[in-house]
Length: 312
Image (cartoon, rainbow, N blue to C red; front, side):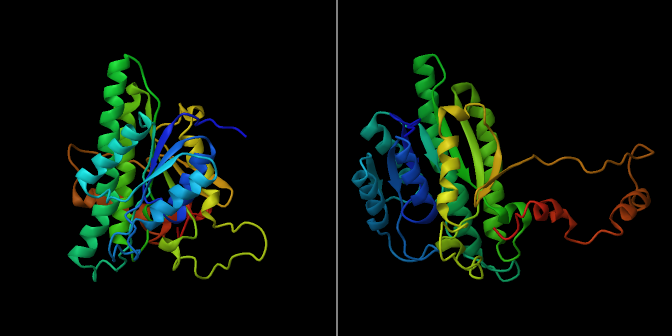
């Protein structure tokens, strides 16, 4: 069995269940020591008290398979607890090499019905949670690189969503947070490249506690692996964490059911120049109105539909 991550140490947030659990198990299978983080709240909306059981169970599962793992039950949306998470990896295994940000919650509501708390809580857990761990991990890698006088092995895999790519009417908070994570990732990729660190972001589609409503109409097969199983996503995370992916940086990849799609950055669809020094309303009307005249309102998402990326 190939073990490209042997001797490396990984943090996986939100790893007590679903995607995070599958990713933690895969990284361990590839040889990594794994710090399994999960705050453990019972509700997918972040409700309920903290519970260390899910993280502890996954860590024990890794150890039972012959791997090395410790559990961390802190809240990554808390700046200090995120610092303690990174420090735990360093103190336990000597260094941190891989950070997989996966923790999140859902509080779905249409934009006209959403409360301020529903907005703030989702942005807090997803976007600030990604920032917190990335901040402390990047400081660790920068210091190591400076001390060594050479690049180090650092890998960040962040988790966005097709809700950002293709839109999701009842998830303005979630879609905004996931869009912000893409921006955070590309900025981080540019900032850390000289230290040997890569940062990439995935949009996974999988049947988990977070997506039980989305995929309620898609029955699991009677035989074989569910096309929506998290195990379809985990191998890509393992690859992005490995030395083989050294040239993969600042990329957005959609993954599900045996498919990986590399998403291009936005491209200019059309360009208009003013005939004078400054545009006038009438000139813009004459140029732009015909351009959009026969287009349906949702044509923006046509590319996503072609790839089969909607409803993730």
